[in-house]
Length: 85
Image (cartoon, rainbow, N blue to C red; front, side):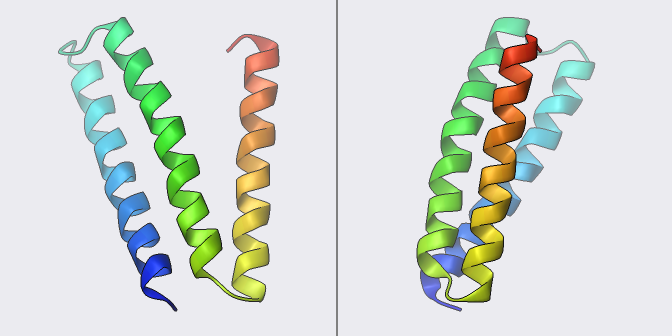
């Protein structure tokens, strides 16, 4: 594994922990809906950046798996947008 791949894995793990903490705060009512929307926009952008780091830092079979995960996430997001969720 390259350093870029390891960095991408660490950043995605950190982002997941941040999203769980954000969910916890929103369930307590400490974050407004508008703030959650902006956190969601930033999260999607960061997810694409981190996935690009994983794709560029991986080789062979790992790259194919990472690309297929990214495509699945993008398709799922497009379906959610089309359904108005």
